[in-house]
Length: 331
Image 1 (cartoon, helix red, strand yellow):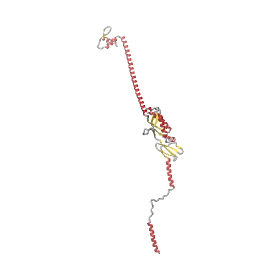
Image 2: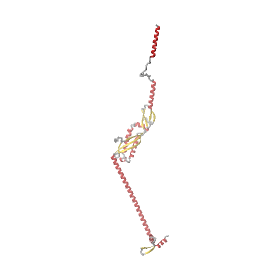
Image 3: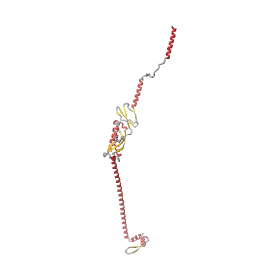
Image 4: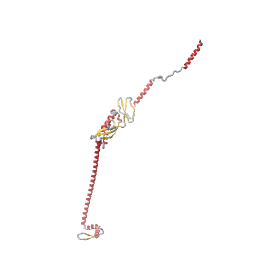
């Protein structure tokens, strides 16, 4: 029995061994969830520390761009007096807040912008005589960098709306009210602009702003008033022309009077000279009677030696003897 049993068991064992060898390995599905080990506490603390450090650095480092100035507001002490200029700055994280203000040249324009002809943005004022005048104005300004903290504390970011626009309108109206409409649109425009500039510079300085320029772009008055002013100016120019002509005529008449007076004085002087000459000549003739005969002889032609003179007793005048006598009488 032992011999019979042994071969059977051996066969069975061999069959079992073959079965184990040929059994396939179980397949692992890709969709099956993979179990991962949770991160350790040390890794969590490291990541948390890096995030906190990044937040601290981001809150403590502030960059002020070119053309801007920073004003620091502290949750503990309020607005700090020193402004931050351009560049990188370190502040207290989560406590200090940096407010940026544009420090470049800015401008505000108050003018009519309505395409239908409206003038909601323009400044309406009255001239010295009460005429309606509409003005378009551009104001160029910048904030005072050294006083940006005071500006932020007293006015805030809305300083253009609360200070600049109302003050521009007020000062433009005041300046226009000091001049007549004719002067504003003709000869006094620069004076109006200078008056506005002076008044606004005082207001801007008081509010920590720097005024750069005031540009009075356009002044408009009603057409009827403009025509009346033009006619008045044309009449004044015509009067000026006539006045100039009258002055020229007056000057010409005065010149003629001066010339006539000069001619009269010359004639008088000549007559006086002639009279004095005649007086002297008469005296000489009385003192030298022979000069009469010599004068007559000089008036005659040189070829005539004898002439008949109409005297009381008719006689012949011997010119040769007179000429000889004259030559001997001369030294």
